[in-house]
Image (cartoon, rainbow, N blue to C red; front, side, top):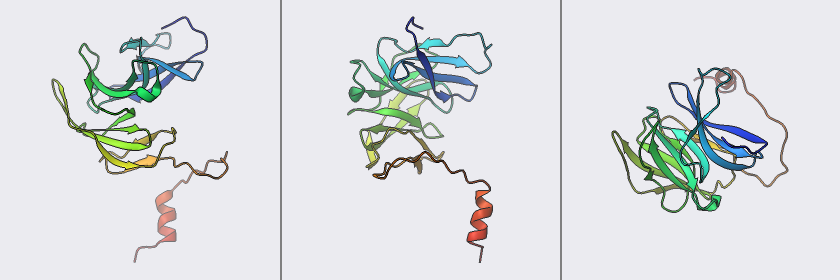
Amino acid sequence: MGSETNLQLQPESVSRDGTIIGILATGGIRPGPAWTLSLSAPSTEKPGSFLDPKSLKLGAAFSPDGHWVAYAESATGDPRRAEIYVTPYPGPGGHVPISTEGGTEPRWRNDGRELFYRSGDKMMAVDVEVGSEVRAGSPRLLFEGYSNNNGYDVAPDGKRFLMVKSSSSAPSNRLTFVVNWFEELKARMPPK
């Protein structure tokens, strides 16, 4: 997958059949080509190349059925000029453009009928139909104001998002885990 030193495999998505898709980063910083690897593969197996290795990839996500991959790509190498595309997995086939004014971090709704992505500080959505080919609607703005690059995820129904909101306060090196959340909620707010 290249002869550069200090390569880092960054997993992005796992299909339901256990295939991982990720991005190869050089020096742990600059994203590069996409790769795939089966979770059931022997530990000695190397990841296989996926998508055009000449362009910069900035995220990839399997569709819920595992037959499509949404990904962000910058043909110029400038991450600010990336767009979202969908291509068949494992191929062959062309790619269908999804975004029109930039995009990164694609995520699928659980039923595969909608794609979400970031465009700067905007969260965008596009209705999609997948079958033997992909048809995409027009991108629409859902909300804006979350511009950090800490990642996000989408609830299965596509109506809620989990994001880390940037704050102006000093960064914290503390992480709090809440276990037995429902029991704590019941104790604090008993049913009437």
